Image 1 (cartoon, one colour):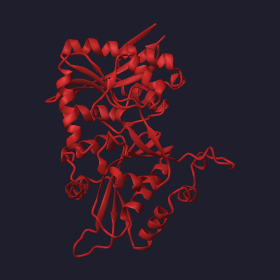
Image 2: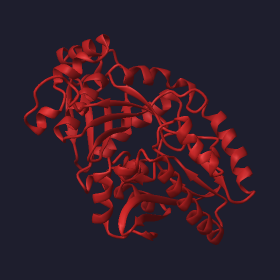
Image 3: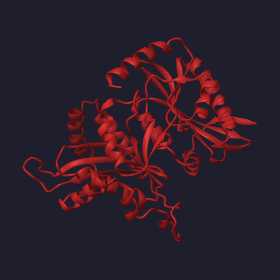
Image 4: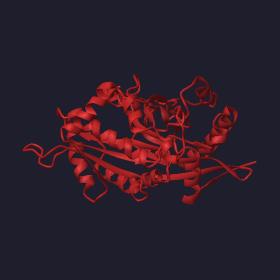
Length: 364
């Protein structure tokens, strides 16, 4: 016997989320609060089987010009014990789909969109295709990621304390591309320093760099309010930190701030979610990322997630340089199943055509 009910107790949500891998901050309690502050209604669902919580799913009710839909970002989150049981996973997704279909019809949403954190395998794709889902025309959040494992339990060396479960700095450096390792050392020699900040002016300072980055790279930036709300809501729980890479002040850079990154934390992972920089011959961003990786280790994270990398046909073609930068720190590519849509109303096809045009505008 199973029951689907809304979870309103943060402690229940957080406990399940943390005990079952906290795979993406997009299913965290904080992200739900962020979506609410952005103006969307949300729903936090829990699936109980014989009174045991086996799945959680944050649902975002999106009403936009391009169409109305119910969205599950990087979810749902499954209990660890069922992650390899494909029949059970399919069963739970089918139940979630039925629940959301009823909600969509009642509240006039034209489709259901799920961006799962299941790996992109034929077996997992079959789960969704068998249930009537189709590949979404665009990605909503990163589907191909670059992830650096920080946990050293697989290494052949004695382990005694929790801190010794982590790879040493020397081991992480040895796994990096030779050029990346050299540029980190060069930044140190060139006098680069890294600020870790949580003060009230931090978003203003980030924004100055972010605007210049967006102009240089020709992308549409998030709004300043978006960045501020994201940071402040995760900061409340101690799960957000800005890093600034600084060089000695010059006439052209009186503050010395050349680069910045917003890192979001879950129990298992540090996510490099927002970044900005001014082009310079000094490799500031390399040392900045290295300090972020060490901060993740300090907090006990098992992974450092560099977020999205180039995925031909899904992401803009100009992501190549950023991808090479991220890959230089070592790690591995992780491919999530592409975002999946389930059609509830023919209005979906208007959204589909608009999003295909949007993908073209993004340079996909």
